[in-house]
Length: 123
Image 1: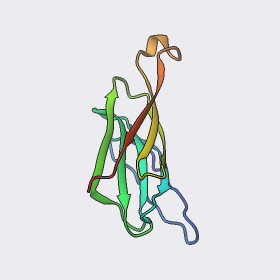
Image 2: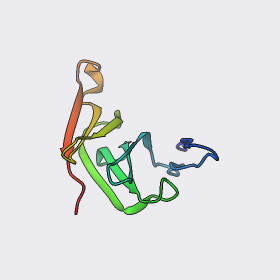
Image 3: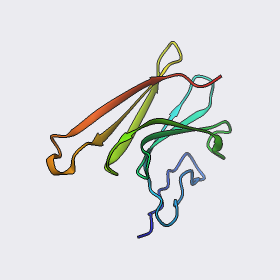
Image 4: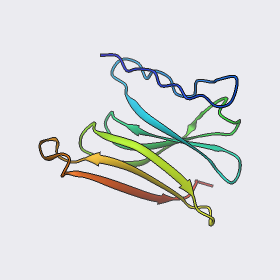
C-alpha cells in the first residue's frame, strides 16, 4: 500500500509542503501555526512506530522545512490510529499541541483520548 500525498495551499502560487512518505510511510493530517518569531510550525500525526505527534519548523514561510527541527511531541500511541494535531502559541511563548490516539481498537471510540503537550521551542 502506498501512502497518499497531502497538499496544503498557502497563498498563490500554491506550494506543496507535505509530500508522499513513500511505501510503508504514513504521516497524516498536518496543521500549520505561525509562531511569534515568524516561523511556521507544522505538526502532524506519525502513524509509523513510534506513533504519536511530530513537529517541524520552516524559517522561510513554508518554502522549506528543516529536518533538523523535527521534534517528537508524543510517542505514546499504541496503534496507528492517532494524529489530527493542532497547535497554538500562548502569550508566554509556550506551545500547546493536542492530538488524539486510540488505545484499544476493540473498544474504540471509548478508548480514544485527546492528549495535550505543553512545550517550548528548543533554544
